[in-house]
Length: 264
Image 1 (tube, rainbow, N blue to C red):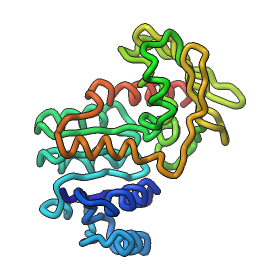
Image 2 (cartoon, rainbow, N blue to C red):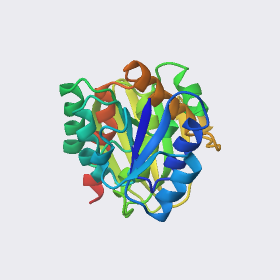
Image 3 (tube, rainbow, N blue to C red):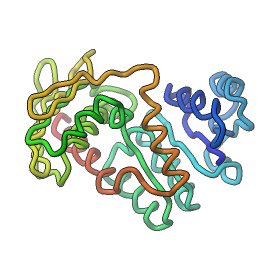
């Protein structure tokens, strides 16, 4: 399987190329964005076949695509041409910065039977897996840093991490969302399915944490933290079985959209 990458400013691209191209099997063969210093460096270290200018230039060169732009507003335009061809597509977090864009991406995947996934890498790390393995929770609390003024989509850029972890631990529909702006954080209270959810979006540096029913863990990110999520994408690309349902792709965007509106 030949993999192409769109949007290379993200450090996740280094993780993807280093992991995939060091092994037998699928291989990253091309990236888009033109022959910048960054892209030429990626090409050399990954022994890539091509650096192309526009995302659509990858058509005919690859069998699956990672959309890794930092800004989620770019994801719809960059993912849709490949979904229309039925390609497996991994949209790195967040899926989009609006519910409209997220829903449109999913609609294209459904219309063309194209495997699609998107998630925070924290969704799959061992600490989150340990919390999820304990079954349904009555109360979930997560926290992590955000920058509402980030040039890459405001709270969507980092807020997706604690939100995606919280919603993995709290299945079901989002029934209500309350938002309170505090000096050190944006406090989110939500009812999700049968679970009470609290998400603390910390203004400034802070660790990622998660707890269920009072048992808290620091969500540790080692140098291989991106690998479990990458493996989920590679399995999807090989089998066409999506690791996350389409409703679960939309839930974090709905929640973050409600937060963004509340703090605007």
